[in-house]
Every structure is written in C-alpha cells, then in structure tokens.
Amino acid sequence: MKKIYSANSFKNADMRYDGIKLMEKAAKGILSALVPNIKGGNLTILCGVGNNGGDGWAVACFLEYENVTVIYTGEPKTKEALFYKNKYKGKSIHIDEKESFEKIRASETILDCIFGIG
Image (cartoon, helix red, strand yellow):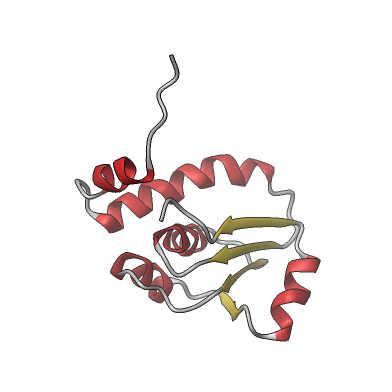
C-alpha cells in the first residue's frame, strides 16, 4: 500500500527544524538536480511569497551564474524567505514589470518556486 502524506503532516514535520537551515537543505537538493541540467543559458527562478519562494531565493543565493534572474510575485511573508531574499545580490524583477515576461520567454531554464504545500 502506498502512503499518501497530507500538506498538514509536512508542515508539522517542517516545524521541528530551523527554517533557514531547512531552506538551505532544500536549495542544495534542488541544485544537485538542477546544475547538471543547466547548459549555460539563462535561468529564471519564479518565487512566490511563502517558503517555497524562499527555497527559490535560497537556490539563487547558492548559484554563481551571471545569467540568473529571480522574478518574484510579492514580498516574502515568512522570515526565512525574507532572509534569503535579502541575502540574494543578483538580478530580481517583480512580476508586474514588463521586463519579467520578456525574461521568462528568453529563459532556457525556468525553476518554479511559486506554489508549495500551503
């Protein structure tokens, strides 16, 4: 029998860990799958306002590519996501800016960090 986990069970499990460290661990897991598949083109990371968006900001912090842009839907609503947004020093664009859609169209790789378990 295959066990199915609820969003609530994941939230309860997440509460047992330091949020910033958990986000760092998630980002490093994402990077291990992402980096081998980046062939040099533009990478766009789409970040929402929650912790899933925070994972995206953390990924951006750990990447050292000139061709990385974060497009965000709004200001982070969690302290962990805000921590990584403030730490990120690369290019970021709010989704409402015309340039954001041009950037998405020109991207070779898009990492979706908008929707999570919330």
